[in-house]
Image (cartoon, rainbow, N blue to C red; front, side, top):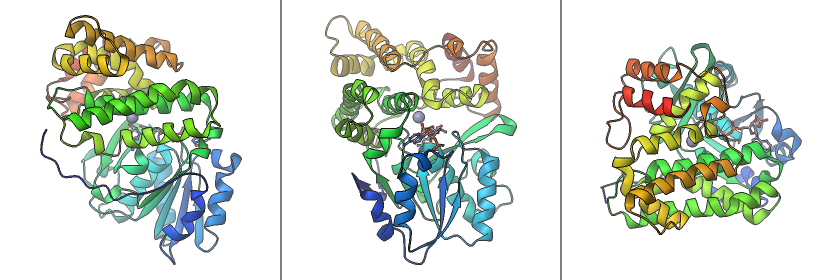
Length: 386
Ligand code: NZQ
Ligand code: ZN
């Protein structure tokens, strides 16, 4: 096991009725900016619960943060924060609203002229304006981590940011919010969380038994609850297990002391930036090719995964590894997710070269757990995903 230091300061309020506790979690006398997305919270009762819990606070609202939170929209919110002397941010939404709020938390205290530099210059946020979250869509784990991904339509870019100052102070996880989530987003949540675990697991063995078994248990839980929650979003027990699996998949716990990869996400983000494909679906497009291309390096963990998660008992380690990749693709497909780029766009020719060129220009010369997936490897992997 590798060395690590681990601290996660986010307080979790899990379960039915927890939204009302906002009244005591937000510091007294805060001037709150309530941030939300395209309006789903106004149709499912979440907005009423939140505003009633905030009745003793001075609250200003900012809605309209789109999926894949857009820089230009967030810059409008930043103006409100400054003009109205906001002191606390409350994100009510999925990963996009929470990520957008993290950007604002960092940008509110940023001393440079152009907050976009936080993303392009890789500036780690050691401090941020305090914020909390009411999660409405299990998927990203953003509710209990300190990372965010921001999109800029103008330049077709989608870049990551983060730092220890960007953990939510608290996050409310009420599984009842799952009831109103459309099937497409449930499938996305399952696939995104599943891939988060894979990115921190499908590397090479370092004899980290606990991390491996935590990771495998999250994968098994997602596989087990997937059909139930897809079939009936009002199943509270399935929703609870789905929600907590997604949070546990990316709150930092399973990545301590083990190598991690994240190349699938780096390539996937480009597909969202170029084609607007849902984040989770881009991962399902890239995963099989990435694991097949890097089979030699990942064989041991792939075989362990095939055995422990999918009960593959026959064959050599290499045959088990290949079977594990196939099971992964079949799992995504069982969620109704297409796994080839050509199934999303007719305009895919040249994508691999374009992405590889972008990585070259950004100096992303070696991705993956060994830091050796080069732009030319990226080109081949994306091409295999057509
Ligand atoms: O905008 P509204 O109207 O709220 O509708 C949203 C949105 O259209 C809807 N929705 C959310 N909760 C709902 C609901 N509809 C009905 N009932 C509810 N309870 O779902 C749609 C998608 O929401 P979004 O927040 O975009 O989805 P998700 O949570 O999957 O977030 C995706 C974003 O997170 C980033 C992705 O790149 C993408 O930008 N990620 C963030 C990560 C992180 N911070 O750690 C890691 C991830 O790998 C990922 O990159
Ligand atoms: Zn993801």
